[in-house]
Image (tube, rainbow, N blue to C red):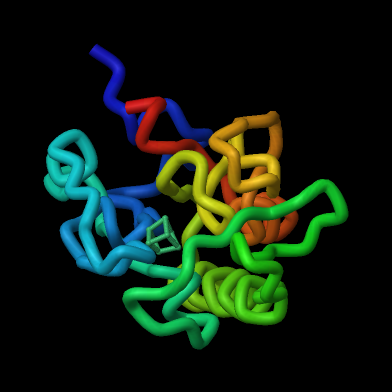
Length: 155
Ligand code: SF4
């Protein structure tokens, strides 16, 4: 059976590789509501990978709890009342990339549909529950930095 970690392009010499993981998937209560999104499939990877937790929104300077925000078609992240939080999301993505580089991370498992961590779909910015193809700031920045990204939906 092929493990989830083996789904990534792994160097043959890599042993117990470091994998960056959305902190909420590892039980940290860091969602905008102050909740976690613990994922048993992610936890199970601890035996075969060194999991490094990061919450880009907290790393970027946002509090918990915090207003729900979505990334719109102009690339900006705004709350439902129009407050532009883009700078926090950009800073969080930079922090995640810096962490990945410092730890030699080549793979990441990120929470689906988040304006930071979403890697295939995100909400469309209308705050009406509509999903579109797209990715969050951190998923995008990690990919540009050469990190292979999957989501918890892929496990
Ligand atoms: S920014 Fe990412 S790690 Fe933080 S709560 Fe949102 S999905 Fe989870």
